[in-house]
Amino acid sequence: MKVVILSDNKPGHYKQSLGIVEKLPECQTEWLEVAFRQKWRDNLSRLFMCIFGGVPLPTSLIHTLLRWSLTSESYSALTNLQTADIILSTGSSVAAVNLLLGRMLGAKTVTCRRPSPLGVRNFDLAILPMFSWHGKRPKQNVCKTIGVPNPISPDMLNAKRDRLMQTLNLPNRPHIGLLIGGTDQHETITIADAEQLNKICEAVATEMDAQILVTTSRRTPTEVTKHLTSTLKHSEWCRLFIEPNTPSELKDPYQAILALSDLLIVTADSFSMVCEAASSGHPVIALTLSDENVRKLKRYTVYQYMEQHAIVSRCRLDGLKQQIVDGLTSRAPSTPLQDTETAVHAIRCLMESG
Image (cartoon, rainbow, N blue to C red; front, side, top):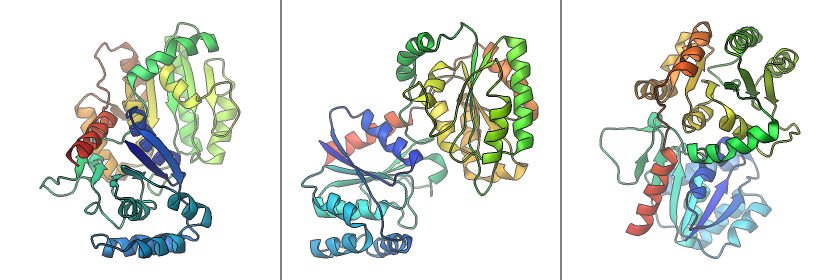
């Protein structure tokens, strides 16, 4: 079975597709990066497929649409494909190309997330997180997950942990992973938040003889990253401080923090990072930094479900210290997400039925 993965070059989307194909070892995979000539051509392609996605299209028209909307490099890469059993994509911008390529090659089309404005009706399979579940009637082409697929699993992290402990010469102490997101239209982390985080980390590290492992993201405001670098990074209890696109002795610093941590704190603005942490098998705290209005966001409905099912706990900064203590001392087992396994099972069922 051959799976062609269409990538929009966004890390969060890439990881969802990667998590799925890594659990399909029997498949041959090919990654293709999709780039558009201009954004408006992307938008018009989506609109066209929104209207005509359910109509049979001649191959010549498909080629015309792809040639018109994509860069010459992307168009050549797509049209050089001879065969595929599954076209897999994550995100809205590559969804129309997924449908067109599926028609051209006679392949099954699979999308992660609900692409706008196309929706999911014309895909053979749509893998949808809880906040995208619409309507009460089940749809045969929809696979429902709680969060989003990703490459993280307890077995994968446990296999890395001992080697990383030796490589970094880490002492046998509690290790707390702090995964810091950034800014979107609803939430942000401020310098005041960073100052309070530093105080909490210092207090916990001192009182519990713990070490802090920190990573920021590409979306973390520059001034916040600079503040954390000047405080957290140079503290003796901060064993790792990772910034994106900076050299590191580790092959995958982000996964290293997930593997080494006994407890993970993730800023709640990043749904994908919360899902990755919740797939690790470690205790996870989803940290809300913005005002109460964000709790109306769809992702907070999922966080509430996760909390009710002992997958994550939630808190604000004023309750973080106690949550850390509780997470490190509690003997209650964590329930890891298994969204990737759910998605892979749905894809296998799709191919068996086809």
